[in-house]
Image (tube, rainbow, N blue to C red; front, side, top):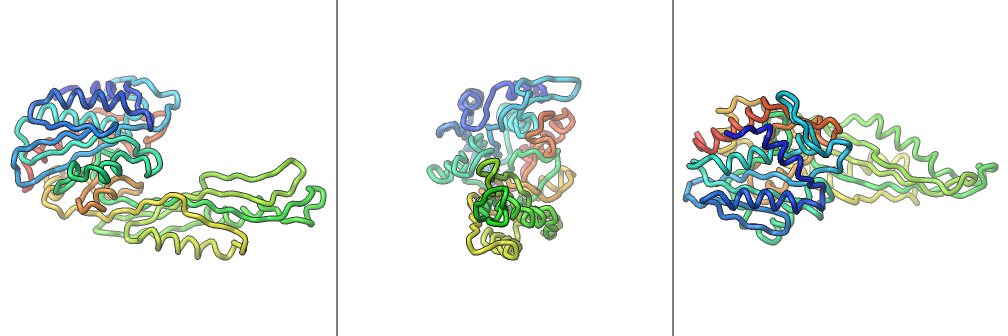
Length: 355
């Protein structure tokens, strides 16, 4: 096994902010193409490599190439048993493990598909995985899938849905010296923000995994001039909903929550939404991972492409070495122990197969 810490640092130092993944895709493609027994295909900045060994099971290992923009952490830095840098947790450590498996597991007990894709950290319409599903779905075919999203080296089952909504509140302009002649739309944000701040979301338990619904105000706009009562205010909300509800159900419930503070001229619009995925650990491949690794299992509270695989009828889970609480953080980092624990669990699974 190579030094996974150094391998992660190598990937961190190849910049791949969303929409600029070409250099990292080139690097991944070159490494995979040098490995005998792998059929490698490139679709845009998405790289797929597949074995064809005639095994009874095919496991898909998938991870995104892109990162969020740098925040003073573009370059890698290794200190002791920790590597720091943009994407170290989310999710270049996971990519390093997948490349290590591709390069060093000579006789896997299952056929393997490695999917390295662009555009996960941005709107769903830019998803490289979504593009592959639309134009080359055969490249994603498999019996089960594991996403290398940061989980802190535990198994995270399913994922919550995510919804972004924009609420436009109406008012009436007036001079700031005579505000009683108008209706201040910015002031009308108060009751809405109070509802969001006091939101006590559902916490359903599905297959032993507890999910936690949330509602957050994430952006606000308003104002006309320093002496004008504003007639418009715009609030962006993010809602995370458990996978036992559809996007339509989640939207209906939010509409009912906000209805008491909205007027006839206000407008609530869903601008981006992705359904969640229920836990799906009953497949023999994922059962083997669960039982032999001894790793902790919990719900995935964020959204991941586990949901996209679920929509393709492929059971999937999340397992990666990165700490999810450090994703997108300026102090993003990953520890050697998490890298080696994740690698050990995956090398056992692909080397031995299901129980």
